[in-house]
Amino acid sequence: MGGKRLGFFTRLLDEVNPRQRYRLATEQIAHAETLGFDTAWVAQHHFHEAEGGLPAPLVFLAHVAALTRRIRLGTGVITLPMELALRVAEDTAVLDLLADGRLEIGLGSGGTPSSFPPFGLQSSERGAAFGANLAILLAAWRGEEIGAGGNRLYPAAPHLAGRVWQATFSVDGGARAGAAGDGLMLSRTQPRPEHTPDMPLDAIQNPIIDAYLDALPDGVAPRILGSRTAFAADDGDLARRLAEKGLRRQAENARAAGQSPRGDRLDDLIAAFDVHLGTPDRVLATLRQDTALARVTDLAFQVHSIDPPHADILRSLELIAQEVAPGLGWTPSAQRSAEAPDYRTPTCSSQERL
Image (cartoon, rainbow, N blue to C red):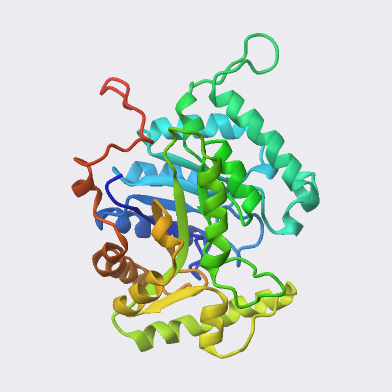
């Protein structure tokens, strides 16, 4: 591959009403596209607006697809245990056509435990439900018969089986994603082992990458996405001031969930939540210390848990594209196109385009 791909990830947490959240997130993704970002990822959350503002990511991405031309659009993630798998198959098949083949499908089993019962299952059942729903989803995309009577997915979308990304916190999950030939999605932060609370994030995630690569079938290109919280600003002091509110709120939420971060100074919280912030030089320097990022094919940056104002998000995107990401191995896609094709995009004729 000719360098890493660069992504923008959003949980749609602007402190405005829902309509404005969706408008601002759309503007952020469109701005990322103009800056050369390769992908945009949106998270799915049900019920709890302080954790995420989007229960229907495919609906939202259909709107974004109509307003963008090049940037690939991904779910990060659809909480598959809560979904009707056949409807996900149908909706993604239609959306990928509307988006001219730009859809990426990140899937996961996690979610806020209290969100599961309204969907008819307990959080403890999510692993089994994920496996069952994933099997149905893949069978539908691959054109297998659904029930009796010759039912098959329409529109056909066999290529989507090659656009799956699995999110995981575990070595076993990395091995499962690799064995399936899927992409691997690594989180911006994750819980530390109880006996090693100061373990660096890359020390946790490198074994996951190892397991993924070891299990990947011969001839299948690895797809590894590393998500990180990165907020770049022209003024480092401003970045810290904006971070204070969001990180303290995140610390309160963690304590309420029984996970107390070590220390209460701002620098303690920056370390506890694996945040990279400050001037572009400072952000780049701390990201370069993350050895897992050197191994990923895809970088995806988000501003959660800082969650600064919209204008500052736009400026951070500019600084990341212009000064941070190039230092991590990214070049704009126009410069890479002659080096390597985008293996995830289906070929279609102009007559097939909508």
